[in-house]
Image (cartoon, rainbow, N blue to C red; front, side, top):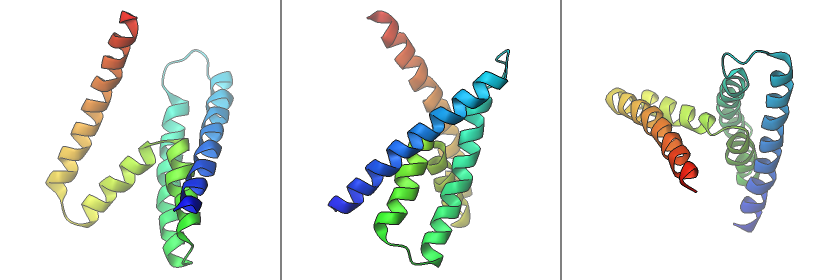
Length: 125
């Protein structure tokens, strides 16, 4: 268990730094700000990567530590949208279309309301 936690820690830090680099690179090139291209880019890239990493980890029988470093760590640090996307795909593959729709709608709406709630709470201090 300790090895897995260290792997997640290392991957998460790396993913977070990579996300910051992408955001800075795109922010410097896209002016004026009109669409969250950096966030959009890392979310789409992260979704692609988590799908790729899960398939490759199964195909090449990678250790749990390597799988967790790449998925929970790297993709989780890079973007949490990758996990959201992977969970949605699993629901679709299992034929839970209604649950997929509910999960997607609730995730987006509650996510936005959570950010809004954080903004409101932050303004009270």
